[in-house]
Amino acid sequence: MSKVAIAQIKSSTDKEQNVRTAISMIEQAGRGGAELIAFPEFLMAFSPASQSAEELAKIAEPVNGHFISTLCEAARKDRIAVLATIYEVSTMPSRVFDTAVWLDALGNIAMTYRKIHLYDAFGFKESDKFAPGSSVPPPVISGECRFGVMICYDLRFPEMARMLALQRANILVAPSGWVQGDLKLDHWQTMIKARALENGCYIIAPGQTGNIYIGHSMIVDPLGRTIASLGEREGLEFADLDLKLISETRERLPLLANRRADVYARSAAAKFS
Image (cartoon, rainbow, N blue to C red; front, side, top):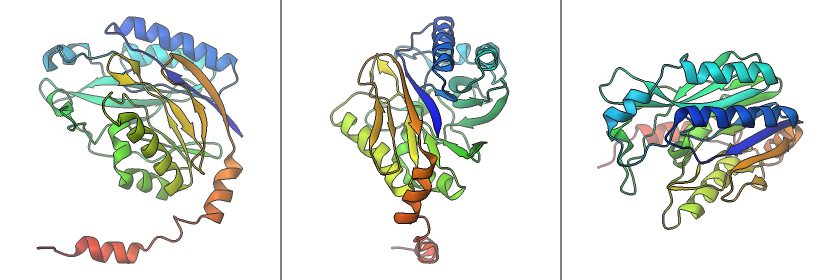
């Protein structure tokens, strides 16, 4: 059994205010006995549509900058792993990386993932402000837990979740800022449950609330059941993850074992007119 905390926040445009909020939630999660607290996408700051790419680039930091260093101290103090997100400086002019950073309970940076699928859909164009990442790191190992990390729009690409599951990830964490719109809540809940069911794993999906976002942070088990949900409120929810359930589900519903990779490879290599 592993206890985790999921944080739902409404980020302001002031990153110092947001880091104070994060520190308070880390302390609360640590007191509650959680081994991990997962924050949503855009923890560092809300970037309104009126903010230019150049203005956003000015608040970006390197991974070892002040924002993450401050959270490293909090993780070490409260002996809890932290998944945080930042705007990371990039070499691309007036563009930043949308980056998730895994901090272990000793306050060390254990993993960095730069979002590879930019949200150029439904009238949005993240590529106007962001640079895409180019790789997906392997799962973070903590005891029997193997955490694969995705970010928001990545949930719409089942290949990514499956790739992490094939690398033995048994828990997927998807910090998100899911934008409001027609059917968007339905899409959010459907994607999370689908990724959990098709890979026989837990999904931890912390989201932004307020501003332009839907909230509804969720934790879903390998059978697609919601075991934690925050609606539209800010705050924390705790959940116990039953690791035995993962192995039992994958044994009873062996989707990973029943894959026909040989057929997929031939089909992928075929040329269609």
